[in-house]
Length: 514
Image (cartoon, rainbow, N blue to C red; front, side, top):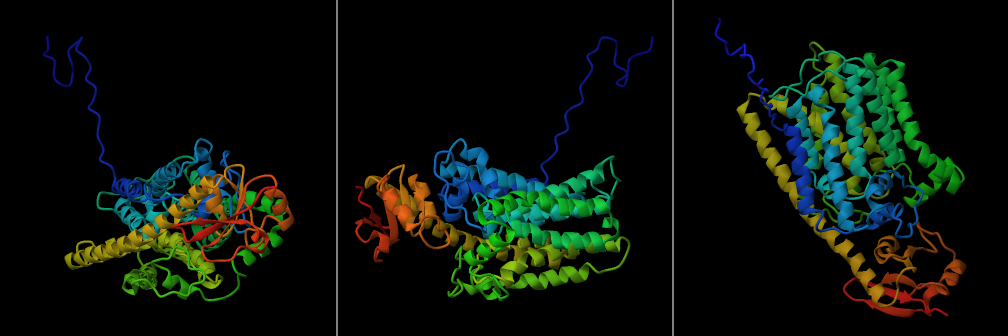
């Protein structure tokens, strides 16, 4: 009888289960985790709901009246917050939900690029974007720009994956960050890539209708210029994504404004009569804050911190030149560099050429797209060259200092502003302004939401009441008008009782019911 060997277990012996292989988390996963932890530690505990957040969140909050939803806004952010606001409207809970969601979406959006760039490059690109003070500050906030940025990254990545033939079968990248060689498509893989394009473009359009239309321009041109994309499916994915995402905006345009043209006209009026003008100077002045520069007659905050912003066009040009190098697969490598660059430029154009004001968050989509070719170029140049590695680490360290300084300053400013809204609401409650109630005047949306009241204005961009309607409401519910601390009351509130709001820089005028 033969003796059993290790490869032929004896009869009756228990079959050994192979030990489970424990895979280390990828560099991209660690970047996303750090991004989420930073939001939870440094942003969520400090902030209450801001002005625009109050408008978006109130739309799906069953416990509060909805604030006036002006023509330039799109409904996408309200859908992001809806799952939570149906349960609670506690600001910290809303921000916690969005912090977790933005962490997952950061990972998912940049992971789309792993078969194209490799794990290391994608991780560096995600880190460059996540380290921006605007990306960190707005990660847990109910604002559209960060989500547009992540959607644009995903849309371009899916389009290039479908073109390169790595939609379903490529790996995540080698240990040194280089992309794996394409292994071919699994059945239906390219079809999944086109669905990814359509869903990402639809999401961007749903979040901000104009941005979805602008994003479709370079994506559509890529379908015409790049031979692997000259087919019906990718073109239909881009066009279909815009059409699907635009449905709520178009329906609302006809229901509330009488058509698309009229909504666009009203949107232009609200945003200060959009037209051809240079806003790059305003963008530079506000790159380190304030969060909204309107009108933008300010001195730049610590101009030396803007070096990275002024360097971006130069670095983008370097990436574009390197993308033209020859060799095998030249066309595929070129479009991998040029498409995100083109999308970044196009998505920046309306904020550089049409507005009379600026806000740092407007350029988040451009930053996210630029991070991809910048990270790839930086690692390619530094690979195996110690002086370049040292220089790269030094630049990243300076970048971190610049972003950290801007983040802390603007976080404290946002904290002061949002807590002031809560303080005004507390004063109104003590004065008997409790739901059902109405708040009108300055800074109406966030104050009314914090107080649990409806918001209304008889003039301005948020006009949704007539003076006759306001007078009628004063006989039914408590009404307060908010002004600056030393300002005279509005004409309709000259007989109303003044209510000091110490520590807020504001004053309330309370209507006498009768």
